[in-house]
Image (cartoon, rainbow, N blue to C red; front, side, top):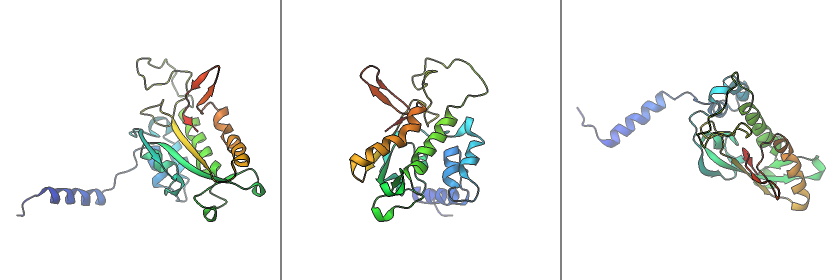
Amino acid sequence: MCPLTPCSVVAFLVLEIARHPTRPSSGVEVIVSRWGLPSPPMQQALTTWPTDFSRDIHPIPCHSHNDYWRRVPLYDALAAGCTGVEADVWFDASLEDDLFVGHTLKSLTSTRTFKSLYIQPLLTILNNQNAPGNFSMPRPNDNSTTPSSKEKIGVFDTSPSTSVTLLIDLKTDSHTTFPIVLAALQPLLQAGYLTTWSPTTGLIPGPITA
């Protein structure tokens, strides 16, 4: 019988994990695992949203640089616990008031827009995270990671007050692109999901900081 060595044990475990892949344990992982399949992954994730959308995902201070290069933009980063994602945006006035996402001009496509890859998914996530539940009771006030009843719940169930930074890199003229970016962010702002600041109120944290 061959003696066991640390290397052989590790090799055995890797092979066993490969033979018996784990099932997605959260809604985010469901979306990532089913991306590109005929059945809409978001629809599957919605069925169990109240209990496990971001279950067992702990946010860490990492940033998804050029996030649109991930196999599943935004969701891959959230599944890893990243608290920051970056989108390079381009504006072409001849193609209506939309922003396109990509690293270079030749990489842009009509389907990869700022709205479809980031704004709409974040709105869907946060609307469901903040939807009324089946029970109404006071939230505990002895847990610093639990938002007050007036605050919006963020992406991560394990840390509801953690804000996700949406870093927007303007690749076209800032004078024409910046107003379009502000307009694109309006749905998040109007829903109360954006971090804001004013001289009178100071900094008011939100689930998304852009």
